[in-house]
Length: 548
Image (cartoon, rainbow, N blue to C red):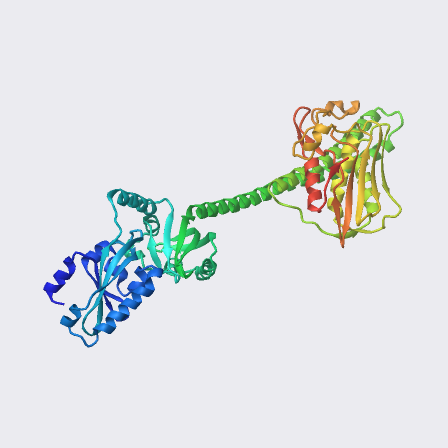
């Protein structure tokens, strides 16, 4: 085309497109670029397949083939005499002269003609849609709404090519319209091939997909996370036109989750280090406790020998008797302190989210209850008029299997509290035979019980009964009352707990009350841990505790 003809071509009053025999766009004039689409967007595309509505496509293709056939063997002057075929009111997709313009449809009258020998087809259009100023303003407002919406939007072809995207999406990814439009979605999300294969399968079936998480990359290579909602705009013949994708930037949430996970991991590490430190401290306390107990036991034995060698009316006898009582109380207090240390250490572990490791071994339940009963009698003075006993019913096997150590701790805590707060009557621990693969341990006492309002908080840490009171201390050691005072609370009731056999493991299943095994620094400053620790021990064994 000569320069002069090229100038005429560009200043023609109507949009003009030149196609090859196959209907592919090979050139457009400036009017076409201003009204319909820039040459960069449509070059190499089929005019009919990409810009003409599907309903109009058959008559367009037929008209193009007719003018090509008529042009064969005719000169330019002969072709100029042939009446031009005009396809009126054809619904035409307008892409605009900017890549980020929102595609809209307009009706155009397209005149179709051909060059010599039908080598090329000329389409000259005139817009038939009348757009007044008011309508144009409304359309521009709508286009602005989509382009600057606070959520990313785009259209994809059936092959995943980006046909249009709003400014929000391109700003998130750092692309210009010229760089972004025409890319394939796999260029943006290279690691999500399988995800998009499934998404397009769902979309092609007419389904709407929601909250599809994908990972993409910006132009600079930074990772971004998106949640996609999408469905499809179909042609009248139900073929795929383009997607309608709404994309939310999910990166901030992902970052918050990652930070939270790091914080949780750090907190867990700190908790483990704290737990290790606390256990180390408590081990340092346990050691002297055991040494004191052994030393006092040796002194006690020596005092017994000395007392036996003295005359009956010796002036030293009262002092030795007082010393024996002090040593006996000292041994008990050291044993109690060791139990308190165990409770505090375990409470700290449970608070940190740690659990005890259970170990299932065969044990004799009768011996276990005898040992618990003996230990309780040694640690706690039994009040006059109170009996402590243990009963294993006849049908209970001689050997059971489970974690006898942890089971014993829970039962011992229950029995100790019954002893501490029963003024007269009986404190008894009973093992019932198996019923529905369950063994029942029941710890009962004749105490005044616990109020109904306290049941909901019974197993909370540091819980205190409103009936808390001081333990009675023999007058003979009144002088050490302020130095060695271990009192507790009246926070028990008749109770039962169930133990069941699970194939080869014995567990505590809950139907019982555990009274407090408590640490108190004074009459007014009480820290209750026993119930909470016993409750968690039972949980570690897979059982439950309830109050009757």
